[in-house]
Image (cartoon, rainbow, N blue to C red; front, side, top):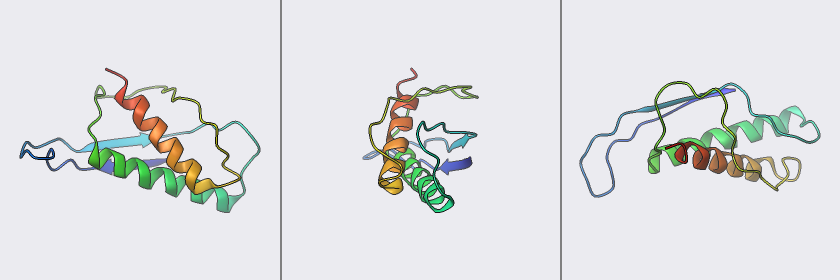
Length: 102
């Protein structure tokens, strides 16, 4: 799907350096009716922006290396109703799932 890179320059209130984060997502599976190309684009951009924002502002505790499959919590929104809002929800769900892998 895309590559997301975020740089953690420092912790809030601290000058400790954090390593850059690089995340590549090959595929996100969404059950439901197919999206049209514009909806798909809006959804993808929304996921990338929100996940980048989250990775830049909040540290995740996740092992380095590849994670073959990540099951994020279920969502109850609709990509058809609002692809941008649904993309934000997906990004937050993925971020939570990444952080939960301690």
